[in-house]
Length: 373
Ligand code: SF4
Image (cartoon, rainbow, N blue to C red; front, side, top):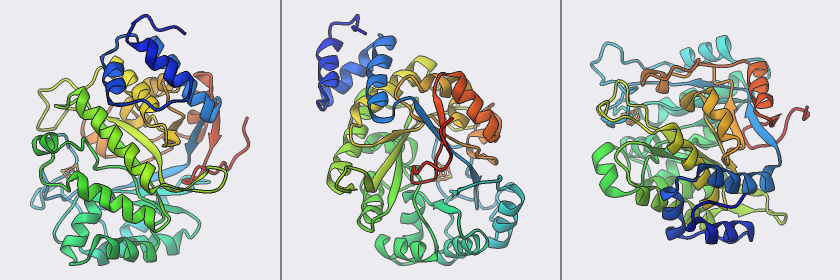
């Protein structure tokens, strides 16, 4: 497809030639209103990498605690310790919840939560170990850098020591949350209590140096400007250039394996006066992210946060993953998400087929674990 806007023509040429885009290209993409052309370019890259496959997994989300001393202005999930709705699950309760809710064939439990000074490394190693003992074949994806940096501080450990202890307990990989927008001035406005960009990258770097894989995210639709988004994407790309480890055929062994664009949901947050991103902006953002992040293999349309319909459309704007069954989502539902809190495998496969893609079940490391149909 030929773009209707002049400024997109040289960028389209670069994309078709497999050349890397620069900061100015990123700004031009975000300034574009030619959504069909952006989608076509992003889809070109997406199909070059993944054909018509859309990946999903069978997973369960558990939030071990919603108690949080931070006050991120976009968050409707964290509760102060004295709030009557604040909770901390014991390892036994976490295992009991997993026994109750883990879907048949599940390959992953995803656990993230608030940061609370009462919780030290022993708490986290405790639930990870208990889950590994109960479900030895299930991948434990847990703790964002925000949590890891806080645990390290509270436990008087380095980030490296903290990760080594968590890994020894059974942590398999790290989700991508807490990145928000890396720019200091934006962080100051929306999440000044949590770790800064340097600490966020340090945590991922230590994971990658230990040969592990992680995900990464960007939260859009609050106070950020397009230049903050482009800067964010370029920092992720630079980190991946430096720290990703690949085998001789180019397959990723350690590094960022998946990027997840996240949309700000205003309801019940301290920024509820803001409208959040439009559907147009969400799709443009998917396309720009796919085009800028040329060294991160997968882009996920997290259906819980986007809504099922937008997650389907995103499969034509650069996304090649739709997350999984999820089962127990709380974080976006506290912020007013109207999606279900989980889906069955049949529902996921149907909605992927409906949007013209082939559903492929994967594990947490993107190994295919079900035949393509
Ligand atoms: S986003 Fe995380 S760190 Fe921030 S207030 Fe919410 S739970 Fe706490």
